[in-house]
Length: 402
Image (cartoon, rainbow, N blue to C red; front, side, top):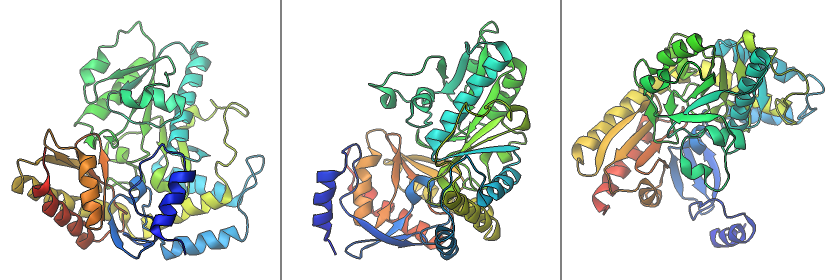
C-alpha cells in the first residue's frame, strides 16, 4: 500500500489545486470515526459537511448499495426506474411536499429552483423581468445561478453573476418589506440556518414574515435546506418547525448519506412549470443514488435521528456554552439548531487556524465564515464523541494567539 507521503505527492501532482486538504489521507470509517492510512483515529464532527447523516459504513447502507449495484445502477430519465419512483413517493411524504425532481448536488438543486422561479414568472407574466431576493452571507452553491444567489462576495469574485438577484441583510424583514411594490419580485430564497456563512439561525418570525411577503407579492418562497434538511436540525426539514410550507425546497448533502444526490421538491401548484425538455440531469435519480436516499430515509425513521439531533444538539449546546463561559477572551457565543452548531470565536481569532491543532488531537471540524468552528457531525454520533471534540477545543484555546 502507498504511504502517506507517496499519496500526498501524487495528490499535489495530479489533483487540481482548488482545495486545501489537510495533510493526511483517510482510508476508512465507521459511525463517527475515521481512520487514515497510518491507522490514526479521528472523531468526525463534520460528516463531509453535513453529508454523512447516518455515519460512515452504516451496515444497512453498505449492504443495500452493494445489492443494488449488482442489479441496476443507471438507465437515464428516458425510462422510469423502480427505486426512483419509490424514492419520490417516500421523500414527498417525509417533507409534506408534492413533487420531486432529482439531480446530483446542492448547487444543482438550487439551480433548479432558480430556473423554476424564473420560468414560473415567465409563464405568469410573459417575462422573466423582476428580482429574486437573496441574503447577505448566504451560500447556495457554485454554478452560475446558485452563485448569483450566494450572498458572500468572495465566492463571486472573478466570475460575474446572473442579473436579477438582489441581496438584503439576513433576518431584516423590514428591508424585504421595503421593496417598492412597483418592482416585481419573482421569489425569495432563504436558508433556515445559514450554514456556510457562519451558522446563523433565522431570527424568530423572519421565515413566517417572508412567507407572508411572498403571498402578498405573488412571489415564490424558495427554501435552501441543503445543509439543514434530512433531520439535522431536529425535524426532517427545518421548515417543519415553522408551521407552513415553502413553494420549493432544495435538498442534497445528507439525502444520500455520502452518495451524490440532490432534489428539488415543489408544491403541486408548480408541478407543470418545468415541462419536458426545459430542465434535466443525466444522472439525476439513477437507481443506485435512489437506493442510497431510500436507505437514508429508512434509517432516519427507524433510528429516530431527528429526535436524536434535537436531544444531542441541546447537549452539545450546553457543552459549547460551558466553553464560552470558561474562555470569555477566546469565545463569543455558540449558536445553531440541532446538530448544526457553531462556536463563534472572538474578533482576532481565525477559525481555519484552529482546525490543524484540532486535527493533531484527532478531531475533525470545519470553519464557517471567518470565526466560527462548525459542528455538523453524523446524526449517529455518540455524546461521548461530541464531548471528545469539545474537550480538544478546551485544550487548544489557551494556545491560540491573536
